[in-house]
Image (cartoon, rainbow, N blue to C red):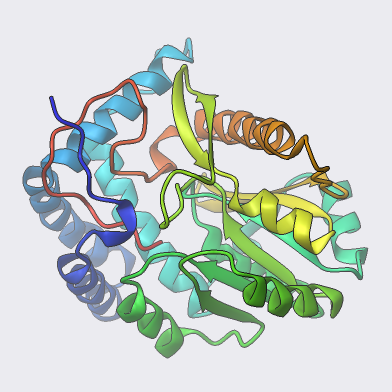
Length: 318
């Protein structure tokens, strides 16, 4: 089978954005249970129409199943799609300030205390696992913290405009980019020096191609994961944190880990060092995927060994 050549950042957004707007309206009119009732036919449509997304979901869930001995997972692609819809709503609720202190559980309290006391700023590496828009809640509980979210999706203007309309949090800004340039690095360096945190995803290959990606092991196969977060951290000479937010028992569990005090990319060892950091990140991502397997939302061809035919994709703007 031929591999899909459509990059995740170029996938059409129209249907997904309209669907998000519709589901948000349903929630506002009928609440969470009304939303869940409507979600079933909406996601059934996506499940039937988005052939490549469905196939990619199955490949991912098969790999997760091979890494766990639990017989209670009962994973299915349709449940995966439904969870995607649930998390989309949760993302909007986070930006709308509807997540209360009682809804959030901060894991690793020692790490959280060190993070809160850090005055330097830094890089926070996130992923498409769970609901990282709960960073908005994190900013609410830590009022001195300001964040800039780097958005790589080329077609995300409408999604970002939706966020701006509903967001009540002025300490988190979105910054749309296509590649890391010296000018951008200078802007971000100034922000970090002022104590700000730069949020960047670590599990999507770069818009500009594969040349800034490392081939690493992930869930029993080879994948290309971007070096961008770690190149940025090396340029900014600042601490690096990993942040995961998983929905467990109707609460948002925030896991924040100190990944590195500073990343140094020595001349002559740059690629080897970057590969090592990307592999370490992939191992941490895998660990959290196994905690909540239905909450990783990469609905496109990912593993180099798995051939996926060209077809329609589910857009991931989250």
